[in-house]
Image 1 (cartoon, rainbow, N blue to C red):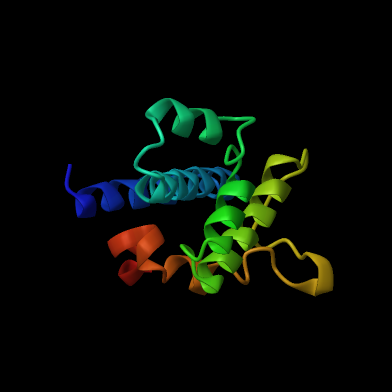
Image 2: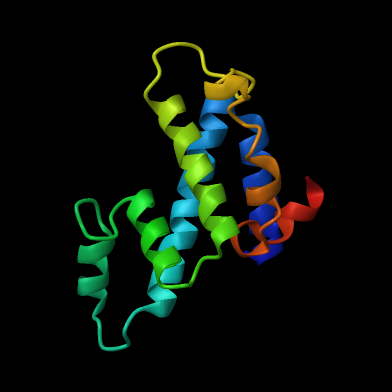
Length: 136
């Protein structure tokens, strides 16, 4: 499947989800992207087993948070992408850990909508969402 076809199919799946589902799915997609960046930048002498051990749950890079922070510290992610992923993670945590109805229109601290900071920084990053950004 070509990259643009894959992005189009991901875009269609996200649009078909509830807001909670779309946030969880978006985090999964971003997590896979960060894992790819770790793989591309790993020491060539590091085996696939070492990579798997460090990126699986419980490993040093096992969480979305640690992947994001590590790649930012190493200069692989820009500050804008780092901040966008951190915003997305915060919204994901609210979505995943809430027993109540979830909506991006919900007001958070400082009377700001949960999704207010998300659209521009994340969607406009071609290194995260490829050709999807120009459609939004």
